[in-house]
Amino acid sequence: MCEKLIVQPNTFIGLYAPQQRNIKKSIEQYNVAELISIVGRALDVPVGYNTFKSRVKALAEARTIAVGLISVNMPELSQTKIAELFNRDRTTILHMQQLFQDLNKRDKEFTEKVQLVLNFI
Image (cartoon, rainbow, N blue to C red):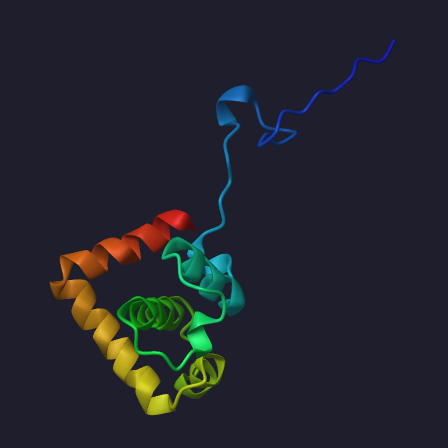
């Protein structure tokens, strides 16, 4: 007689019970569109925020965080390519990259927002 194999959600066949765990993707395994979407959901901004021309603080911070995370985790992407994704000029992307690094060092509130995004991943 065959026994039924019952697999619980978030378990993986071949792992013993103590080894079973949720396996999350690391940030490096996401593509650009997924990272942009994650930042938007984590910071509760509207879909498409990356191409909006608005200077509203919440949208501007979300764009800066997205550009910063993409730049740090996907160094193979040029500033020109990132600029196309955000409907911005290459020099604006350069400014956002520098702003991301600066704010992440000196602004606790901004750093908490970056950490919120990273925890969302």
